[in-house]
Length: 348
Picture 1 (cartoon, rainbow, N blue to C red):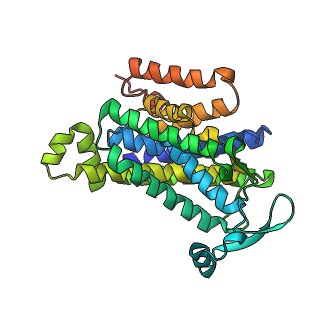
Picture 2: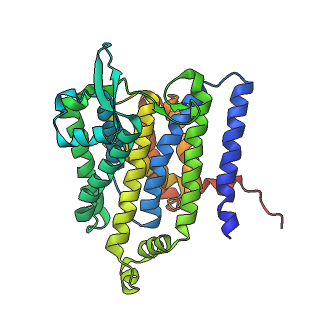
């Protein structure tokens, strides 16, 4: 059973390799850009699948956490911190060698945070915000929880739209790339298009493997018990409040990581990433993918995100995801389980 849990990630790895080889052979490697972006959106969807499919908690603030990670990283990398050098926080970052100088959009030198410390700070901020939101709202259940997280998501979006430091409606651009190993970096360079594709999909596969292990851990069993019957789980000495909060924070941090990496990859981020419709998209993807079936959710997310990014849904993009959500809840409440259609049928 344990080895079977890793078959789906292995199959997705083979599929990712085959797709890259096909695009190389057919001279259509421009598709890799949207596939890379789809992989980052899928990271956020997997976090929501953990929260909804295993902890039984819904969140309509997921796009907000995605944007917090992206915006926090972008601000630290594009805003000049020179006027704040006397701040204790900036002095601490300087002692930790977390600051650097780089040219801004006009060629002038500015002081900013290095990419990796900026990423870590962005994840920390996402985690803190998720705790602040999660502690009170996770006491609610059902549609009350949905409305509370919806309100939190709206607050995040309005703050992004109304804050001058965050670029208001224009968002933030000119975000530098994130350096990795051996000259590889997460950025929009066409030269590194294939490398970025494998980085994004490698991270996606690592997440799937981690979730496969987490599912069988003590924490994973506690979440399954809460999903089945929260009162019964509490009677079995499961700290339901702590388990739900951990799942909520883990889900938010994964969304923040996806947002930060996508911001590095595209070189910018806008307030539309925090919209309520984006949160509904994540819910629709998780619903059609099968809630607790991580590999199936990943395939559904990549397919739908790719089609959306390529513009196949046109101006009806949001309407399509709304229709998918309604249709999946009415016709397949437990999700479609895409992997079931890919398995060979047994002969009688």
